[in-house]
Image (tube, rainbow, N blue to C red; front, side, top):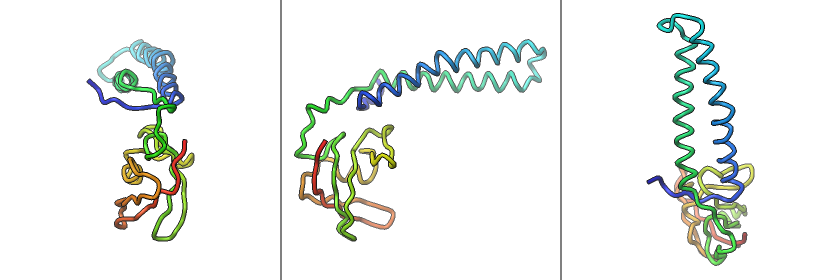
Length: 157
């Protein structure tokens, strides 16, 4: 039994598209490389054959892993999200109490994290610190430079 992960519909679609590409595009391409390398003769000294077989093994491992992730994926229904607390998919505006800087992040699943889009993982130090916090509460976040306190200013979706 794999670990259950939560995704947005868009995030799960990306995973399924990636799996489809691996199975329909990459897998046949590697099979062709193996066949071409095999046609070149002596397999005992055929580096191309070895490399293609290794690539095939790695691809099959990635396919199996991704199938497992997808099988254990659950779509988050954001109509059920409670905005009184910071939860996955919450947009949280916080204030760094050290320098009063304000920032806003959306809490997402580990593999949907993207700092450019201000999406931080619930597994990250800030994400873990904010989970379950209410407006007005203070999250103590462990950073390499010690504990930084963030005050939750607003929670939305």
